[in-house]
Image 1 (cartoon, rainbow, N blue to C red):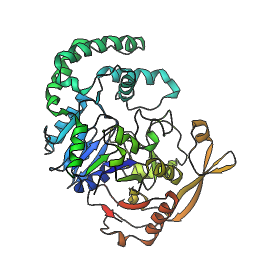
Image 2 (cartoon, rainbow, N blue to C red):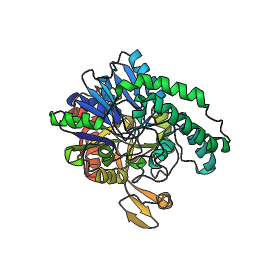
Image 3 (cartoon, rainbow, N blue to C red):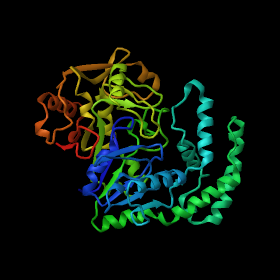
Length: 423
């Protein structure tokens, strides 16, 4: 398989967990390199639904090594809760198959309090964060005031540093009208969590490089999507890390020259969660999908905003990520439609453009330019081979390839592992 990065080509929630799970069969290591517990990957196998937030999807394969890289911000309580849930579903998690970078930064309870405080202060200009403390944790990292996972192996140092940080941040939290984080109670809870997590903490950059030298295949599991990237997304309605393919390198310690392939994942339509501009948003599509029980966030349970496929976004994401291939998910979500639209360009103040503008004002001023395709009006969910797809579905996918400049290699026609077609 070689070393492959899987990224989202939209605003996250593209079904990356399912695609990563499918590709994992050919991998030896599965690596998370960015984001935190604000990510939500859902994988359904043998009728069992697994929801992952911090732990790579590869954990569902017994013979794979999973790595949480240095670019991730780690919630100690969140990952322990996730581990307990997965173990209750029969998943094996040990210090041998789950490694956590000693230089990953920690998300503490005061980060969550700060997250809520900052969102409340924004009023009508809320970004729509998950409230899980991701932004404040990355802010501490950049300001060189964060706590790193290696401290989970040094309880004496951790206790002193943590107590100091709680007292320091409580001033801001209380000033915002949020209840202060209890100092001693929090310290004791974190120390208890540290004892459980310490065996997993190691230098994961070395783990990855030794695996590459041994001829093993690495699969980098993206979190969120291209348009939530702190640099390339719809700023400021973004997350706080680099969710594009470059982030997989900086967030793991594996250099670009060791990457062989990038797979960009996108839905057959477009969704986003939270605030921010959405050029192809369509309430009718949203109502249809929600009534089907689809498009509710794995992390928050929030109903996602929905719309037609925006090929302008995906084309730019293919370029930014250097994507060799596309994996299209949720094609079956369009099964019942007579007409299916694709946005192939924007009109911005009278000018036709073929890339997303950089400012929110310009994005909000854009009008979608649509082309129309006839729907296939057939249930795709039981199809086992790509060749058996209706011709109209194949024509839709061919047009997506033409508009985005990337070859479609995988196709999702349902939530289960076995509802993935190789193209």
